[in-house]
Image 1 (cartoon, rainbow, N blue to C red):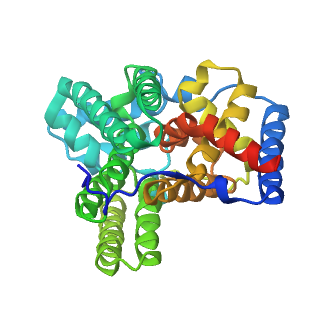
Image 2: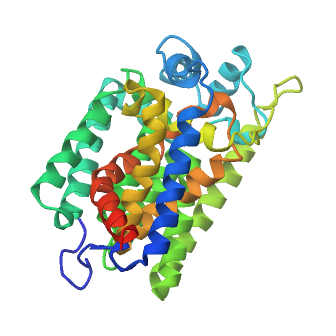
Length: 354
């Protein structure tokens, strides 16, 4: 758990309190513009969350079939190759095949996989709530627990099969336990998140760059070693996938789709508890969630908003319509950001009116 000493855990302060009126008005205009653009964008039927996460079809069925083969004694890469091929899933490039971490864990644990995910959700929630308890008192703590508990309860029973669910909660936990004394623990948890889903690697990059900006050279070196480790793992993964390839295996059409802000809003809407709200309301809440994190002047908040902006910014360009389940990855952090949104809007409005 993060070191509670004042030196390592600075008290949260309001970033907007020192802004000029003109700067605050520009920020408010940007937030409103994003809300309006997102709310007015054309809708489309859900693809990934509704179908891809159903237990009997889509990605869930693929992952379940791989596990069945592994429990019968087959190796992961052989099982993954066979099931991808049988279901006409791409095997090229190698990143279309998940890392074996979750499949190996699920094979070993069996029915205990879901309880373990639930425990992880509870631990991540408690850790984050304890870390931000000084930001607004008991109301904020209560809201954090309620929102994150709702997040954990919102997903279908097939969610333990999805690497993104594990990676998102591990990322939340890694951020919650981070401090200048406990960055090593944070790094280990973050590495596990990347081994669950390599799309969380930007978190390691952000944490390393933040350490550099704060001249924490030992910590920066640790995050750099973590990124290098991920690189080695991915090279080994590529070699193992290449070993099971056949000449007729399907290739992915690629992920550069330039879906822009509409895709980002759709992604967040379809992959979080916001799914139960009108789509237009998600378009309003998403900028508020980012504003909530941006509002806090604290090393933890700086890392959170930097990671969210990097991840969501990348999704402006990268991500097909059927990749909206990627929204699971930043989902927990966005929900926490909503807790701070009311105070952020109030502070920004006061500065804009000055």
